[in-house]
Length: 191
Image (tube, rainbow, N blue to C red; front, side, top):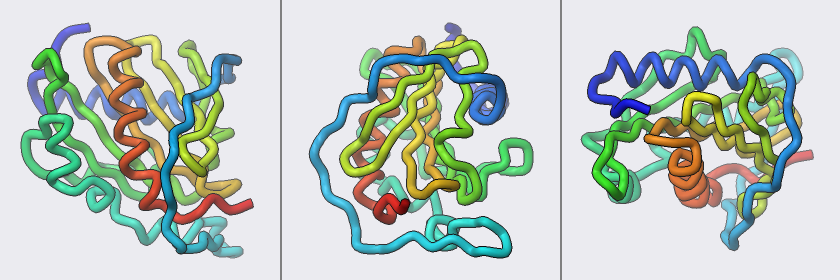
């Protein structure tokens, strides 16, 4: 996969990952590894009229990674609020960084207060189910080398971590690392 060098490529890659997260059918796979961690004591509440998880919708995705945490992925500046119109996200934030071997990487966090992890579709990639700490998770390795790791917050709400790096394995490792940072900051998983 070519190295991403500018924001228009990032926007195209992020849009492609976001669009893939809602279409087609899923494929079976292996679970996402679970690691230890804690969660905050907020509870998630759905708005009956909109079907939106209000607690999750109130979270700003750029606040889920501090500057110090984003620096682990060699982030080049603060997170940038993303356009959610095409993806259906409630809110989004994206960063540009560098991998361990100094190639470009783009990563983002999308709040989806009206879409559950069961709505993440393979669209030609490979979907696996598992857990990240106390939250159920679904991971999608895309056909173009990207990775989306979705954390379940409620039956109809999730948080997506999207990564585009040199290959799917590297993208999914970075997504897993980011998920382990932000998962304890999310509301506990609701039934």
